[in-house]
Length: 375
Image 1 (spheres, rainbow, N blue to C red):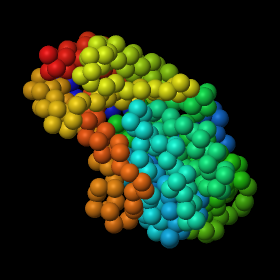
Image 2 (cartoon, helix red, strand yellow; image 1 turned 60 degrees about the vertical axis):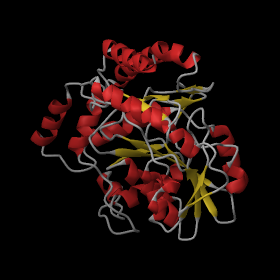
Image 3 (cartoon, one colour; image 1 turned 90 degrees about the horizontal axis):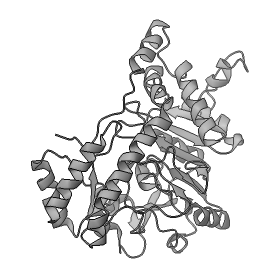
């Protein structure tokens, strides 16, 4: 069976974890956490990176830092993971869902302005499959209406928009290092902070509301409770696991891109024949091969193809169920405008296996089975 996902592993992870244990430094903000933070800061040119226990928690921190309160509204796509909305619902805010573009599955930047009200406080673009939203337009709207932009870049590490790293446009950006992502620490994430004046508040929130980060740097002789916060620090053992992959980020990304390109080349004839649709990467966007998906004719065709592939030892999956159709989405949020593409496109999208060390021969086999289905 060719599984849908295999968590990335380079071979150095256990060596680094063992080092943490032997040095008796396994809690948060140890040497490997700092190495990961510095690596991401250097790679993205953000003012500060703080490793977190998940991308969900990074987004919750961003909601706290942005001052989101009960009664506020936050604009986002419905085609996303529940954490995108949960972080703001926990603050008492209402997610306002806007339709997506069918080419990239990203928030339609041309529909955002009509959804803005006097209660809107933030825009949350989700960079689906590591392909950027149109950030120029989104940042222009944010400036015009004095809104905070919080980027859900869970799938976006190593991706860029017009040469700039995803997660660095908004005031805050959020990465995921879940086991399904390009680089993993099992469960984990990171908060990117664009503006230096927000760093101290972020450190306080991340450290249970204390200024312990300043204490560890020797800036104060004792630490105390300053503000609200929680424990958003991952174990340094998790960070050690992640750092082994960050060291090989270019190699891992190149391997994934080779598979992505092979999928695209093999399946292009089917797309040209009008049988399927392939992913789109707009000009100015450099993606990270986070996933490879195709779009079938409809949900029935997709269901049949999933079963067909499963019988031939290929595990494929569909993706998000639109949040505005879920019980919690109906309870906490609302959809602005017409659901022209969100539901329709979500019912056609099928994800094919994509992971580090997937071989080109395996990609060829998967493509041959997709082709056989349509023949």
